[in-house]
Image (cartoon, rainbow, N blue to C red; front, side):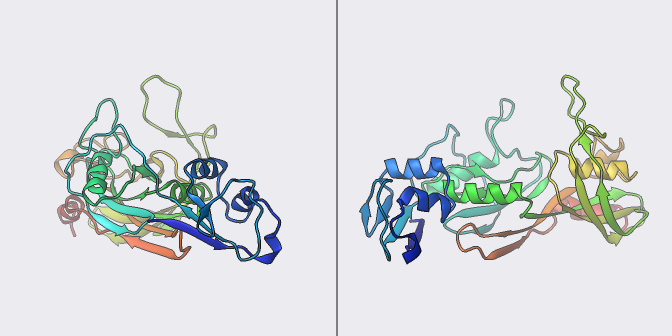
Amino acid sequence: MSTLEKSVDKIFEGRKIREYLKEEMGLSSRLISGAAIDKRILVNNNPVRMNYVLKENDKIVINLNKKESQNIEPEKIDIDIVYEDSEIIVVNKRPNMVVHPTKRYQSGTLANALLYYFKETNQDCIVRLVSRLDMDTSGLIIIAKNQYAHMELSKNMQDNEIEKRYLTLVHGHMEEVEGTIDKPIYRPEVEGNLKRVIDDRGQRSITHYKVIERLENADLVECLLETGRTHQIRVHMKHLGHPIYGDTLYGFEGDEELIPRQALHAYGLDFKSPKTKETLSLRAKLPDDMESLLKKVGR
């Protein structure tokens, strides 16, 4: 059972528990209300109302587990689990896999696979995505197992406190072996358009890059995202004149024979555990298709 636990200091004596949960523990009104209705907020082992007045040394326990369901069919699909604890699970998504069901892709998604895994391991969880990746981009994705973990990590993501590292293979050799791209990304308002462009009307977008390996006519580049715009790395690499191998939207034609998708892999995540606040540093090796591509372009 996943819980939050606190012992009340003397300075909070006389305060109502609702105020304490919001101000001292940083819980959202929605989480507090739901847990209170379900009688999952206990003081000294007894459920309490939210007007309960705290006393010194009161022991507060909040049970984060609750019965939930999602309109997604569980499917037995292998997933590569990189890290798991009572609050979160981090998986290495394979290429060409949709993260969440859509009208076009109703099955075979990561969410279908995760719900099956939760069911098989007797975990009463729904899929709460903290991060997402394009269908063709491989790599690490964080999924929260409860409302509290999702709230904490989503806030960290919004505040750019989750470090996201990618590896990508680009055409040609970068002029500088490392640097920062600070260019706004904009989506033109054309029906059905997916393509983004560099435009002052767009949102500020920052990518730090470093060449990891120089090949015959390609560079293996590490990208550290300071912002997380849609297609950010793909647009920024194209802007520098070095589009990503296999990127049919922003790159060259003819790459399909080398790799059937953009050579982009979310290989690294650094973030604080929502419960222990300790830093987790997670890494995922390059997928087989990118390893094969490296050999094809001259490793």
